[in-house]
Structure formats: structure tokens, C-alpha cells
Amino acid sequence: MTSPRPRTLRAAALAAGGVVVGLVLAGCSATNPITTEDPYGASDGIRMTLGDVRGSNLLVVSAAKGEPGNLLGGLINDGTEDRTVTVAAGDDSTTVDLGPKETVLLGGGDAPEDGQADVTFSSVDVPPGAVLKVTISTPEDGSITVDVPVLDGSLPEYATSVPTPTPSR
Image (tube, rainbow, N blue to C red; front, top):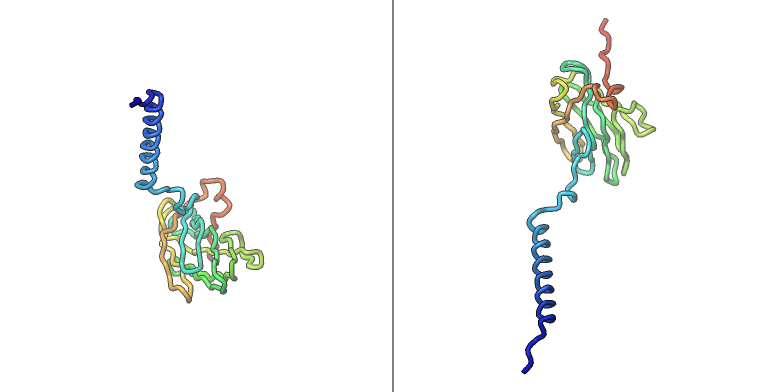
């Protein structure tokens, strides 16, 4: 009877060690979910979904509590039917029409033919740095109330979006 060569035993031990290391490393991803697969808002605003309608990067820009505020972001219709979306905060509400697979940018102006809509609240009842309760609804899917962050114009990218109060007579 011949005994196994020391080199063969060493190779078998290394192979078995490699298998064990591979199994241990594979176990890490089984117990820890991969966070890059989770959708998140990589911006200053928030995301929301209501049926076929998605809101992306939604935020309000206002100079101060009690001052007017502009809603910025985008509304996207992922469906194949038209959607009429109502956006409301306090006593103010605005309707935005979305065609199938259409995106409308909010705060870029009131030009529906260019995919833009203005959503302005006459008075924001929270100061910049807080969140404003905004209700978004469609006749088909009901409504959702989301906490939208309120920012002021101190960041250069929002400085031109701060609304000015309408002069009273």
C-alpha cells in the first residue's frame, strides 16, 4: 500500500479551504440585503407613487413660514391612460393633466405644451427646514398625503424658484 503524497494532501486542503471561504462570503449577502437595489430619492426632494402616477424629487421652495411656496419636481404617468392629478396643500389646489407615459416638470413655468406646470401655494404654513403635508390625488387611485420638505432660496439651485408675494391693494 502506498501513502498519499504530501503535495496532494496540501492541494486538497487548499481546495477545501477555498470552498469554505466562498461559502462564508456568499452567506454575507444572504443575511444582508443589497441596498443598491432599493429605490430611493437621491436628491433634496421625496418620491411618491399613487397608482400609475409617480412623483419625483418633490420639494417646496418658500422664503418663510406664511409666505408663498412653489412645488418643484416631476409627475410621471407610467400608465397607458390619461391621468388628472390634483396637488393640494392647505386651501390651495392645482390640477395637472398627464398623458400616457408623460412627464410634467413642476416649477418650470406654466406651459403644458412644453411638459411644464406651475404649482404654487399661496401660503406655506411651515418654515423652511420643516415638512409640508401635501395631498396628491387622482380620480382613479384616490389620494396620498406625503411630507414634502420645504427649502428656502439659500441654495443657488433654488434661489430663482422662491416665489414673491403678490402685492395687496
